[in-house]
Image (cartoon, rainbow, N blue to C red; front, side, top):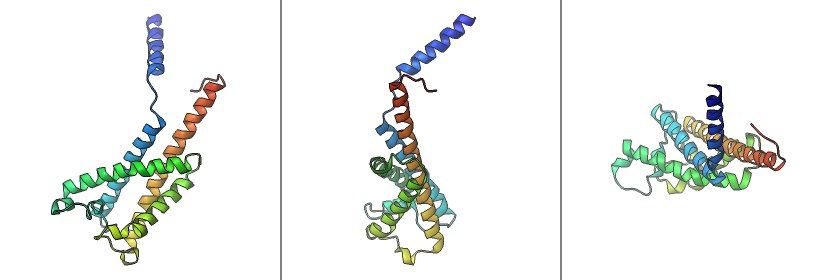
Length: 178
């Protein structure tokens, strides 16, 4: 019995060593997509509960015709589209800020994204009023969601990057990390 348990453990360790590790680019893309989907879904919930007057559907407004974009299918497509766009935002964070280990760069990144969306890209979205015309509830809610998005994406990417580098360093030094 003891021998078979050891064999099983050795086989599991061997299988783990044989699995190709997920590339850093894959991790960044997954983090970006998941972050975009998660936080745009949270934004949709905030919209449903009237914390915000902006729905994730705003992303479809200038590009798609028809009323369907304001209903369920439009919401699902919008959330997925925001997830896809978020992959680009995650790679931008990776390129610029991956080495920073604290949560603050991610939070500031979220704030910068909010400023970009609501000040620079605002003219693209005809159904979204300017920041001065939005309610304070909408402004505060959307800022918080963007800050949390930035924190999620930024901290996840920085953690993965630094963890991967420490594993490489440990292997180079001949140390075993668990």
